[in-house]
Length: 85
Image 1 (cartoon, one colour):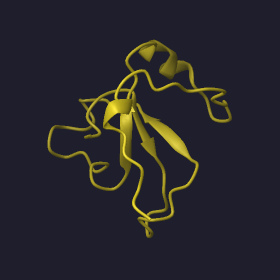
Image 2 (cartoon, one colour; image 1 turned 60 degrees about the vertical axis):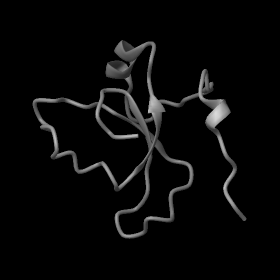
Image 3 (cartoon, rainbow, N blue to C red; image 1 turned 45 degrees about the vertical axis):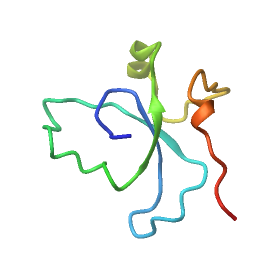
Image 4 (cartoon, one colour; image 1 turned 180 degrees about the vertical axis):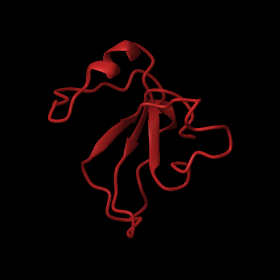
């Protein structure tokens, strides 16, 4: 999934280690005027897990230190696969 729309849900990691992502999540507050097509530096660097489909307007009110108390997958579980061991 590309980082292409406001409300993309991604997982943070350090810049120098592609395998150290653990528990930090973020929402992309995409602005097409600042990130032109084909120039999004987020693609290929971070995992994308989905997109906000309801309540996008609430993202503009999120502040540093806010806590997500719950999340729910509403579709796509049929495509879920467990990682190989």
